[in-house]
Length: 533
Image 1 (spheres, rainbow, N blue to C red):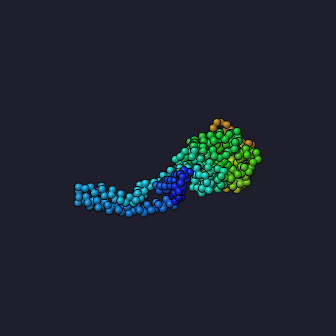
Image 2 (cartoon, rainbow, N blue to C red; image 1 turned 90 degrees about the vertical axis):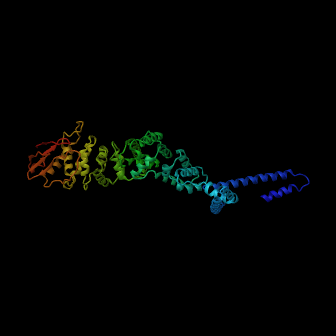
Image 3 (cartoon, helix red, strand yellow; image 1 turned 180 degrees about the vertical axis):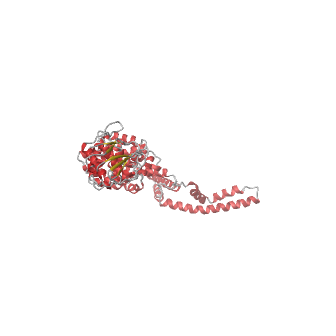
């Protein structure tokens, strides 16, 4: 370029007359060349000064490595100059060599000095200890990137969790980055990676879910709710913005931090996880409104015949976890949804729920919801399962609204089961006594409804127990109410011992199949009356 400009300048002077056009072309060339040179020098200087400069390239790297090599002898040289200045100061005190010689050394070795300043002082290094700044820079670069291939390489490093932990920017920056990654010019791989990253905010473990929820702000939850497409008719007449508002209010209520990460999930998976939310560990807050929305949505789909949609929703969670959540709901549920969940595995799920009821804190169980689930699982009654834990629960926590159905199902089950194989005779006996007691009332004084068929069946079972040659097996149990009296069989007498009082009733074996010898009054402290045929 310099040679070309030189030839143009010589050409302008070779004519007899002045050539203003050639001189103008030469001047324009000089200005353009100088501008290019200034830009190149500025970009190279920026790359030398800043470690993460976007103008960095092979030339700037070679120059910096050369400057680093040249700075080493300068440090050695200045060390020698300091030694000489100290030696001279000791001999000639009138001249301040310790000030003069270092300046002279820097002037004489100014190229080495500049290299040393670049490496030690001017170089702006990347602060990798501040992850917040790194993340912010990463998000800014992705949101402003125009090359889809670059985004495809960079999306693997994108993480919602990293943003929630170290992100210091506003939510609008996260939204801007997500909109760029979900643009139409990006590949399917980029979009699927982004969806998979969102699922990391909602781990399957409930403790991790609660810990994650504590780090999510209301703005982030609202952002995640806004990026998913919820049906406009979700939950009946509720519109989308009403659902979002209810989810926000519920998830930021007391003891509901475990719900917040669910907002990052796709719609169908979010619905399924909400239905399982009552099976989370720890203290749970009031989440009934969100649970009802999710359940009503599934119920409406079933009513409209959209079975495949419900199957797809429930495929995101385990069916047993769903049932465990359902029996802890403090209120009414839809039996039709429960029937669809259990399908043909009623007795297998009933066996696991029976074990679950034995282990869980009884205060977490919803008496009404458990009764409804039991009605579905035990219809028809199993013939090879010991349901003593469930019978024990129903005998201690009877519900007026479900007693009619529960008492009928359990007495039908006991009629077809080998009673001596039951592990807890005390609970079974107490339940049967409640069934035959016409004065069995709740705390409000209302009689529990029991049909005549169920009452007669319970009488027959009690009478059969009395005439049996061997008693039901008992297990040690810790009961919240006072234990009912136990029965002991002799040759022709039944001894009823309600604490310290023993009452002897004469009973003939031949009559035991026709009449009931004794029955208790309502819980918790049964008193026994004698009934004769």
